[in-house]
Amino acid sequence: MRYDPIKDRLGTFFSRRPLLQKLFYRLLDLFFLRAWYVHREVRRLLGAYPPDRPIDVLDAGTGFGQYAYFVVRSFPNARVLAVDVKHDYLENARRFFARTAYADRVTLAYEDLTDLKAEGPFDLILSVDVMEHIEDDRGVFRHFARVLRPGGHVLINTPSDLGGSDVHGDDETSFIEEHVRDGYNPDELAGKLREAGLEPVRCRYTYGKPGALAWRLLIKYPLVLLGKSWLFALVLPFYYLPVLPLGMLLHALDLRGEHAAGTGLLMVARKPEAIPAKSS
Image (cartoon, rainbow, N blue to C red; front, side, top):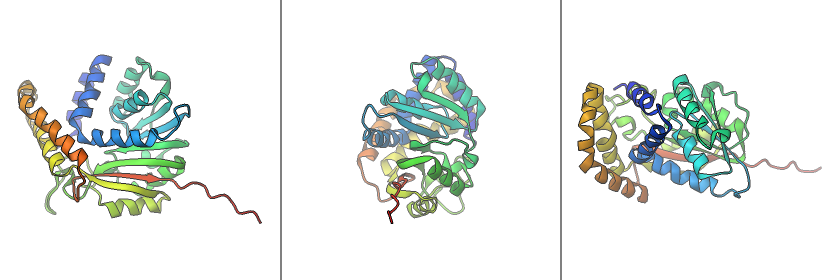
């Protein structure tokens, strides 16, 4: 299924007014379990900094800009460089942020992560559901290591190879056609980060059984219907009346649990502190 045309249409609709864009961000945060995990981890990482210390964040593949919005809204001392390869997404987000109180703390720019020009240094790099779209992941991780401040972190959220992208067998293809890989396993992702000079700190499976069921109910089935006809948008509010409360319960259960396996993967890695040169 081609996911981007549906995303494009939704993004265009909600970008018409700042209030609609804020509603869109709220819906994305609510319906996508990954946002629940990412928000918790960002609070943990950025909350460790003194409140009067400026924090620089790279939102690497900002998409609609919802994570950049979350960061600057949650941390008054944070500044975000939000980059993407989609000009229309960037323009919509730029127009939105220009009409908010956060305009001076969010910079939006066109960047190809495989040829990243940003210099940094950044305290945190966010990469949320981006790496499954990029073939040259090793090159991207080298750029991440280059622009991270020593002691800084990169947070990567991606599908796993245990059913991520809704692939459950060798003969199946990704539910989302734009993916160049179905997902990662922890060892593969950790190994590629180490090759780039980053040290994995923690990794966990997300979208265990509760989260995987919630994803199908809240996201997959509605998208399949919209992919057939946008007329189904008229019945989705009635569909969500009973399904949304169940989905929220499943999200909460997934977030609280530890999963031996899951269709998502959340990795935090750190750039080692510079080692002082020994005096002779």
